Length: 358
Image (cartoon, rainbow, N blue to C red; front, side, top):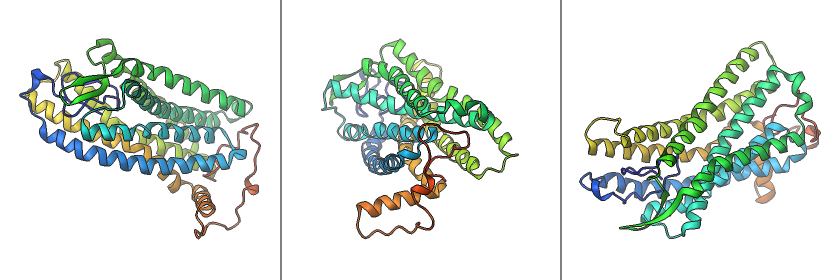
């Protein structure tokens, strides 16, 4: 969670300092209203996000596992995107409790592990979205050249590479996050006294997590949209609509928080001028609200799938009918698993649509 004291960390969604932990030298700047708002608003929102995100992403995982014989590269990325969101939300109950009681009772290892898991879920999400964007670009712009490379083995290797990269980027969070004692009890937050760590957080949050992916996606989708103007493939239009919706939603939810983190960094460096207490209170409220808004993003992808993919709705209803007696599937017309059977060994250039979007 964000902390609006002088030693605020700059990693997106990874600073879990207590909302009641005010540095002694800045005690005159009271932020009671922001702290009281955070203690009530954040735990309730985190619990709601955890429940909705677990159910939604769990259904996505179940659907894709059930259709594993029809898997293509996009499905592999969507599956791992759901896993990333699940990894992200598993830490929310811990931070809901931390927000409420302003103390970390789970020990130093869980403090480090939760921070690293949080980071890994965030970065793996953005990296898999970049992979999906690049794959879409290659399939649409250079379909004949990439057909032989889109194999199951290549998809698995790419998945391992992305997870290793995400873990590597997140490793500093495990190393530098620790439990410290303050007036309200043990607190879990990164070592914001370390200037190298602060700069790395800023780089990871805004460069690796926002600017570079955004530039790649804008460049790819600009070319894709020009190409699609002259294409009549409904499948290719649908998959681009799906991925573009995922990407736009991600940046709409996370960009405000990253901007607030950058402004907070400028404040800590003395680059923002104005009344110190007013600036601190305004940034504290902005960080609290934008952080909560960003965290709720992990519930959104399953909703996008449900709106974009008719077949995803069918498969979810079929799963619910299997698990819960009495639920009737209304999407039964002309659809069966065998009618969409495809090879799991080679992802042909024409086979570019996720199994639940057809």
